Length: 140
Image 1: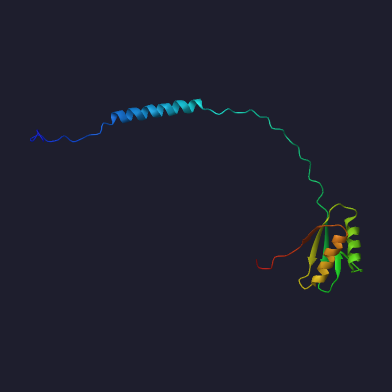
Image 2 (image 1 turned 60 degrees about the vertical axis):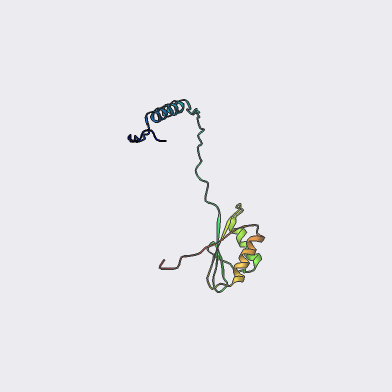
């Protein structure tokens, strides 16, 4: 039953004032709580270290192997190409140095066995750090 036939209904409006009041209170709360939650800072005096100059470069021994099976240890051609002869030459080149690095420069056409002989000689001499030298192809 509608007793108000001639009256038009008013448009409903949303009252934003209470919403703004609530948001302002929330913003004030966040600002106040953020100012009280400062992190504590530690005053730390870190120790200083004085590094000595780098020691001498690590001992390296270069072993060259060519296609014909010749061995060169630090520029000296070896007459004895057996594993024991190569090992003796490696020990002489190390001159009692500790943990030398053996760098093998092998020709691309050298046999695998000649490279394996150098690796075996360094193992029997007690030198475990072995690396291979390579070169970049021309044009790159």
